Image (cartoon, rainbow, N blue to C red; front, side, top):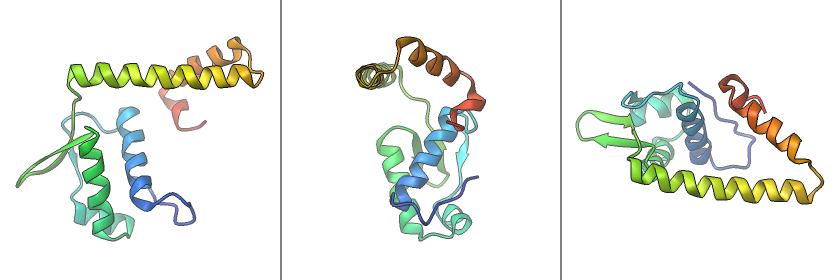
Length: 127
């Protein structure tokens, strides 16, 4: 599924979360698909199950996954109202970053080209 970089300063549970988010955003993991159990994921990544449990708990709190008792965890479909708020917050963040790029000398054309390139799913993880 993905690997953990033990040399990375970012905590392992955050790396697990980031990797899941990338897979969900890229469409590799689809809504309602089952997520590996905590024990299976910990074994696959060779990490402590408590680390995976913390990542899953955070992903659930952020609305990326949900748990059905006795059946496991699944990729969530964000509710429309929450999705709308999250999208608006992301646009604010994007605007702040774009303004920072302009302040540092980037042209609007370069920013537009970069954003257009992000629309290609194959390029999302390569930048």
